[in-house]
Amino acid sequence: MEEVGRFVNRSNDIIEKVFGSIDVARNTLINRVREIAEIPSPTFQETERSGHLMEAFPGAGLVDVKRLPKGSVIGFTGSEHDRNTLLLAAHIDNVFPIGTDLTTRIEASTLFGPGTGDNAANVAAIVTLAETLKANRVDLGRNVAFCGTVCEEGSGNLAGMGEVLDHLGDRLTTVIAVDGRTPLLMHRSQAIRRYRVEASGPGGHSWDGFGTPSAVHEMARVVAALTALEVPAEPRTTFNAGTIHGGKSVNAIAQECVVDIDLRSLETGCLERLERELLDIVKRIPAKGIRFNSTMAGERPAAEEPPESPLVRTALAAAGHLGFQAELTASSTDAALSLSRGIPSISLGTYRGSGVHTIEEQVDLDSLTMGLKWLALTVMVLAA
Image (cartoon, rainbow, N blue to C red):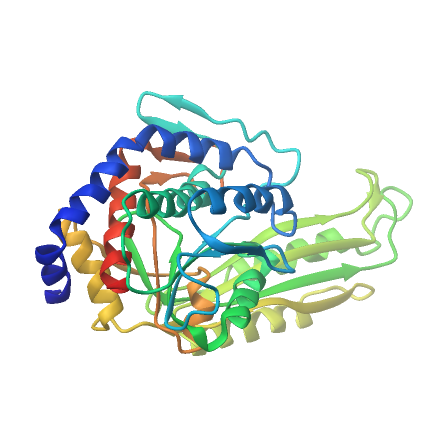
């Protein structure tokens, strides 16, 4: 806390210049959010959006800009070879399949559109921050890497972040995942395991074959049994059958059905118990003639940056300087992977909004400059 105060006292002039530039850039920032949000970018199909950053990063003053093999784009204020690097990672993928109408619209002071908040607002924030630091000739005193990562959502399993961590190696000493919403400050990652459960059977005609077991019917029984489970409120533990599909026709007994299931907990032990219960359901529920196969489709580790750590305290104090109280929380972001590797890491978001992962997602436009100031002050203190 004191470190932020000392930085503000000795660097007030440059802070005021940076904050003033952010205020001036409000409309540019809003337009950038809209532009990024309207570029299709489902997980594993982020090429067009990564191409956008390949053009935006050099224009924002970053050097050694490159696209890594999986598609993440990275650039630096110093050099990619500099040690003691601080990484800002904003994922560029979203959950909306190709063909989704991504058109954005503004009503009063609210921006509507799929993916406007998660994560277009945060991607726009890191580009605008790089521009602002360049325009004000801010001498950070430490190398900062700006990165748009791929494969953060869903079955992407943080593959883009993993590639970035491997690329930077021991040059990387601090991570801020620019993800989520203001005033949330993620310092703890959820333990997650995801399963794909597949059912198959003989199938048949809905009339002539009535009584033949259906893959869809049996899968429905499995999902119903899962939803009947009691899970602890503390430590918070959750489950979700996110997608389900199968069968060929309304008058055909389904030969196949697939469901994707997400299991989460703040404690690994609780997650493992829930996992065992799911696998037991899959083993005992299905009727004779239906074969089930369960495959782990993804896993994310539980880890924590202690609330008393310098990184967390700096972000909390930066929020306090701006007049709001940040809220410590647990989530699943790119920072989960860096935390699990022992790298000091947090996540913070630069917007207020709602409707994440829905078509009617919305962003409070008046929150964007405050969120960016929070990120900017945190970065300047850490870099100094």
